[in-house]
Image (cartoon, rainbow, N blue to C red):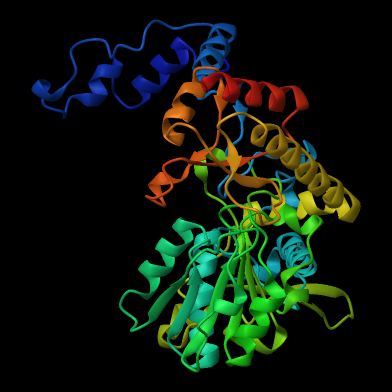
Length: 444
C-alpha cells in the first residue's frame, strides 16, 4: 500500500463515478494507432526490499567506493549529518521568490547570518545573500568593477579557474570590454612585479589558492592594482583554505567572490552550487543580488528585511546592478549550518588536515621515479605533478584500481599534457594516500 495508494475496489468505484468501466476507457480519445499495445518493458512488480536492493546496485555504478583525488573547484569534504536534518525544518520554508519576504523571518534570519559569516570568512565588510556559483560570482564582480571605476580593461590571471574565465568572456563579449591575461610564473603563481596595470584597468582578477593550487601574494598584487586606481578581485574556489590563510580582505582585496560548495554542500555531479560575494561597504550599492538587513518593528522587536533588494530589477531593469534577482537559498542555508556547526576552531582543524594530508601526498609522490612537482609555490590542498606518461592515460589506468587520480590539465592548457592536478582533502585516509602513491609507482 506504500506505493499503490488505492485498492482495486477503490479504483473501480472511482471509474464508475466518472462513467467508465475500465482504465482503458480513459484513453478512448487517443487514436488507437498511437496507443502502446505491448508492455513497457520495466519488468514485473517487486517488493520494497527488492526495490531498495535494485537501486543500491544501480548507485554502486557511480563509483562511490572510489578513492577521490580530484578537486579543481569541486571538493570532497565531510558534511555533518545535522545539515540534512535542519534544512527541512519549517522555519526555513519559503516561496522560491518571496515578494513579501518579511513573512519568512526564519529564512531572512539565516541569510543575515550567512552574510555575516561570509564577511568574517573573507575579511570583507559586507556580503550578499549569495549568487548562483563561483563562475557567475566572478563575472558579476567584473561588471561591478566596471560600474565602480568607469573603466573597461581587465587583467585576469591565467591561473583563475578556466570555467570562471569562460563565463567572464560570455558576460563581457558584447560590452566593449578588453581582457588581458596574466601569464603564470615559473613558481605557479603570478609575478606581482610583472603586472601591466594602467589607468584604463578596472580590476585585476586573481584566484588564491589558484587553479594549480598555488597561493598568490595578494598583498603585493593589491598594491600594484591600487597604485593605478584599479580594484583587486579575488576568487576563492576552496573557501576552507581560509581556515589557515589570511583572508583576502586583510590583504587589500576590494571584492572577494568564490564557490561555496566546500561549505557543507554535496558534490552533486558538478552542481548546482553556491556563489559567494563580498565587498567593501562603500561599494554596497553597486553589489549585485540580494541583501538582508536587520531592523526593528514598532514594538522594538528585532526583525529582518530584504533591503537594497532587486525590486528595480523587476521594474526598472535599465537601472539594475545585475540580472540576478534571486539567490541559492537552500545552499546558503546549508553553508550557514556548516559554518555554525564547525565554528572557528572546527574550520581551522579541517583546514590543517587538508594542508597536512596534501603535503604528505605531494612529498610521497614527488619521491617516486618519473614524478615531480611542477611548481614550487606554497599550496593548500591541491598541487600539480609532472607525470612520466600523458596524465589522461594515467587517470584511465588508475580508474581500473578504483582511484580517481586527479584532473589532466591538457584539456585546459594544451602544453601541459604531462601534468596532473591532484587534490587531497580531510576525507583521504593515510592508507588511501599510500595506495595511490604505490599505484602511481607501478605505472613506470
